[in-house]
Structures are given as structure tokens and as C-alpha cells.
Length: 181
Image (cartoon, rainbow, N blue to C red):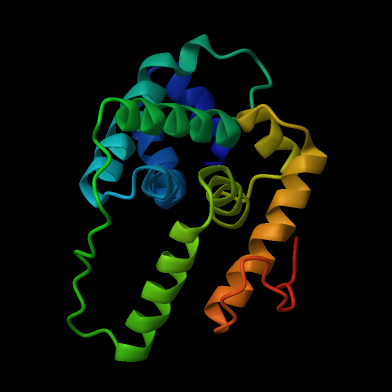
């Protein structure tokens, strides 16, 4: 079942189709929520609330709605609602490290730390593009900014991340950019 077919089935009240959407988007939704809230439990709450909303409101979507962008928008709005309600806490690392090679853990922590150093909008743009696979135009629609601004902020953020992860602590980061889609 394709994403569009699953979305249409959810709009008709099919709970089995919601599982398809959940499996496809859970990591994306969680990552976006975590990038805003910086709290594992709050991000998990947003993940669950997002799919409850998807199930409740899919039938109200206009024909031709991009399911991915719609789900990401719901997650983003719920994460900001949680943030405003004061659910934002300090960053915790509750990662279960059992059985994971130490170098992999260190790399994940470096990446997480670097992402958290970005501004909120820049972090969201990187997460939405790299994890959610949204196009710059779609991200612009979600954030309410022009696609050109999204592209600029994305390139600038990748450059900064590359600098920080590569050991270059300059705010502008001059390391080469990873391949872009």
C-alpha cells in the first residue's frame, strides 16, 4: 500500500492503514519533535499525539494534500504547543548503549550535540529535509518562508554541522558540504 493509498484509507476510517503511515513516518515525526523539544519523553508524546490527530482529521484534508507535509506540519505544531506549555526540559541522553560499538555512540552523540547547537529553524530544516525527505519548497510551506531561504539556511546549517563535527569550532564552519539532494 502506497502512502497516498494509506492516507486515503485513513481518511475513510481504516485503522490498519494508520499503521502503514505510522511505520513510514514515526522516525521522522519523533526526530522533528525531539529537535524542537530536546526531550525524549515529550517527543514520544508528540509522536503519539500526531498520529491520533492524523486518524481524527485525515478525512477533513483537501484532495491533493501532500500526506508527508501534512503529517510533518501536525508534528511541528504539536511540538511547539508542548514547548509553549513548558514541557521543554534539558537534554538527557537515555540511550541504551548495550551492545552498541563505542565509536557509533560517540558519533551519534557528536551529531546530536551539533544539531542542538543549530538554531531552532535551522535544525528543523535539516531534520525535515534529511530525515523526512521533504523538498525545500515543502519545508518552506510548512515553515512559512520562501524556498530560497530554506535552501540557503539548509546549506549554511550543513556547513556549520560539518565544521563542528570535523572539529572546526568556528560559527561559520568552512568544511565542505555533504552531497545534497
